[in-house]
Length: 162
Image (cartoon, rainbow, N blue to C red; front, top):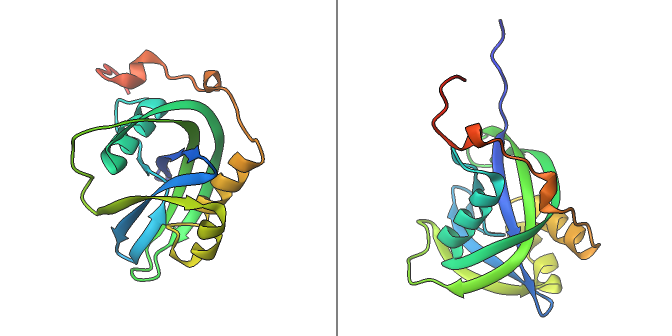
């Protein structure tokens, strides 16, 4: 029997206000990169819970997802390590909430509001090509209701059988 291949599931928050996008700058093995607030799905959480948690951890702001912009599959090969990883990203639009009194996640240098022109001019520093793809899809009005996402209660913890 062959091993089961599993992509790395991630979530991202696309937050726009007054034609500016709420981004993060983060330290990575490949240098300082620009990304949306984003991160990995943890065990026992829904995709919506993951994007709320990741946004809070990386920006110290609450986030309320309002729609699904899209799902994206990409393969990334690190220029420094040569490691190949396939990501399955779920990008959410939503509303930025109040700032919380908490530190940013390790490796997050700062949050920054960036215009579309700023983002285009900094593509060489984006964490992945998905940064612009998600923003372009958002700007083109791509939007699906959150009701498309279903999480069975058994996926949220205390599984007796796998």
